Image (cartoon, each protein chain N blue to C red):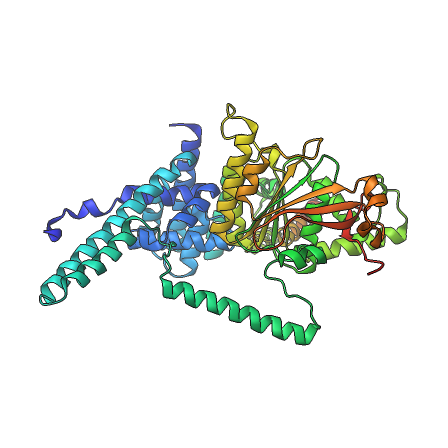
Length: 105
Length: 451
């Protein structure tokens, strides 16, 4: 199996897994859609490096605090098909991460 | 008996899944399938549904990936349980290489035609059983017509009967008569166009505009306004009339094309814009000019490695998604060859034939720019002339013309001729004097100063 074929198989398996969890109510519809969009961005469209980096920054420091809940809600509300709205979302998350950092000293 | 045919002989689910999977993984495959198949070509209703979902997304300019199709189906309430996901995943795993898509589409199409043939046999058998006293000649004629439709003709093809042709002809004449009459009354004699404006009143008058299905060839020597002519045409159609135009450029970058627009729309010298040597008032004029471009129907596709096959695929995509009415190829001499061994003239002939077919199939006008030799001749000119509907040449007016030709003296500052070498629908051999401002990259009809 070539690398490309492996990629396609991993992609299809991941889509299936995420959608299955969504259909079985283990993920909310918003969570399911966000993860599916993210998968498309990473594997198929290979774009939005800033989104990936911001997401990584948040994942590395996520403490489950109130601010983290706000950040999660901000990510889930992002419209992946509207670049302007996505940029606004990333700006907001970046500011929230900075303010949390300042609070933690 | 027909009913004894093994059922699996009439469908090929693997081919259907390979086509659908390919559409989920590749935009090129999507364009091919969208143009060559319909939902009714799929045997499985589930596959037909996936095809329709994918085409729906494609038309909305959303790439129909597995994720997008799943989301769309879920949103429409079509995919609601884990079994649906498994089926979709199973289809997605039948991926193939892009170059094989036509083979699999052909297989789906063949089975579809076979099913239509079986339907024809069943219907004919029923007619035989039910109408045993009917006129044999009539039964056979009717069967022959249906069978011909299955074998010789594609779905979109249509044979006009004498009555069809007569009705069509009369309707066309009546439509033109009424339009001419009404415009004559309203606009006091201004001749209505049949197609898209050419951007020159005199050329509009002779050609009645660029019509759907037309292949237009414009020849000019290097540095004598090929791109300026193309963008002047695009301005008339996409900016002034707000219709969609696709512009394929084989040698200029995105930035170069964008800068040319600044000059064309603001009438400020191109060199100064390029150098940034403008004042603040001019900057503001240019900003306003670009806002006209923003609201226009101009789609640019810089493509240094353009091939005839690629033009077909791009044109189909933009016809489906943007409803383009004109495609401009600037210029065909720089297109990659089908086969490197064939001579230049043969390659140009093949490209021009492909573009004529494309114009007719998509019902758009296609304009090809070609380079003239130093002596003003065109390579493969006779063959190109045979294929095209309108052949134009853009050439500087020779100095001696200004002294010897009384007619040219009746125009204000003309410097170029737009020569109509061939015009399928009207007069040819006409030379239209125009003013080409090389600095501002603008063109216009030369004004008549006396009659």
